Image (cartoon, rainbow, N blue to C red; front, side, top):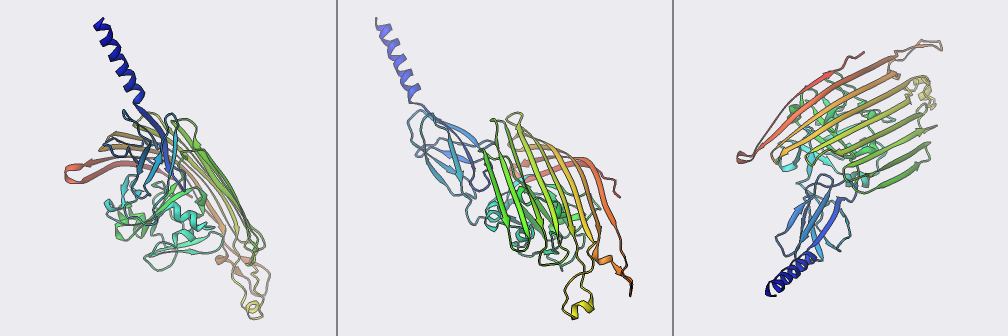
Amino acid sequence: MKKIYCLMASLLMFINIAFAQITISGKVFDKVTKEPLAGVTIVIPNTQIGITTNGNGQFTISNEQPFDSIEVRYIGYKAEGCKVEQGKNLNIALAPTPTNMQEVVVTASRDAQTRSDVPLAISKISATTINDTKPTLIAELINKVSGVAMLNLNNEQHGMAIRQPMGTSNYYLYMEDGIPMRPMGVFNHNALIEMNIFAISNIEVVKGPASSLYGPEAVGGAINFITQKPTAVLTAKVGVQVDNFGYKRVQYGAGGLITKKLGFYVGGFYAQQRNGWMTNSDYDKNSINGRLDYDLTKKTKLILAGSFNDYYSHTGGSVDSVAFYSRNYVSSTDFTYRKVKSIRTRFSVEHKWNENNNTTLHLFYRDNSIGQNPAYSIRWTTGKPTATGQVNVNSLTSKGFILQHAADIKPIRTKIIAGVSLDNSPTT
């Protein structure tokens, strides 16, 4: 009989312990972009129990003793205290702090680091800044960085100056998620026409001589556009903009995690200018970006991303001197244009071997074309209604890969990055 009582007592103790254990699950994401935040610290107050979120911002934390709240902490974001309830999943949105010198950045080396560990003059335009600016043009964002001037040459045509005189020189490297938008040796100062402003999560600008570490294309500076990841929760947004100068735009975005492993995001816009204050300045632009993320295993992530941009603009030329002095500010070159089309896709495999070693493989494809009959090449025949010009096209089709391995050597605070790339880009 004593043995039966002991067995029943042990069973009751086990049941009490099992029922006393509380388990809480949830997701943590950026309040502005809704992107999941990896590596966020979740702590049960007044205990030593803590855990960090995975690559999709997900976490599960438990304790044998009852608890009714958790603390959520992440560098660059405001700490949050959250009430919890057994069996109820949490969706926690962290707000970025206004100023922070320790933000995690995805650098052009395709490896996430805190700003204090990056030996470069690097500026970051955060998602909060982008959201507050509500930009019409990328120049409105880039010009917020000290030492940088992006020239607006009408209808998204532009030039760049990073700690140098303004101009259209080929001193700069433009990247999308760390992958150059153009191959080595092919530069166009209007290349950022091919960027979708409503697919950008944040922007990094590398200034000064250290940017040449990214190759001869970046001797004057490098700009890396980080595109929007799949959101941690299902989101959808639509916006419309109209002004009294003939500009119209429809913008949209949608995304989320379909399953615990699969997520997507699609964003873009269509813009149109008609009969604006500047003559012969009509233009159309259609931009779409899409991305799929899949967690193959806990250590391996697959990413499929692509972008499409279609742009056509009139490029009204200068006013005739006789017309100018008679206050007739109308350009006679109503037949000049710039036409841009681009398709970029990439398939990436990211594998984390352990805390100190990770490998990435990017397979990419680019099909870019910039055609124009530029106003600056038009020469009118004196006394006749005819002119000569120059129609030209710069186009390329690229295929290639970038394979990279990064290793942290903790005892001596050193990181080694090694890799190989192949870029096959015949051009015309």
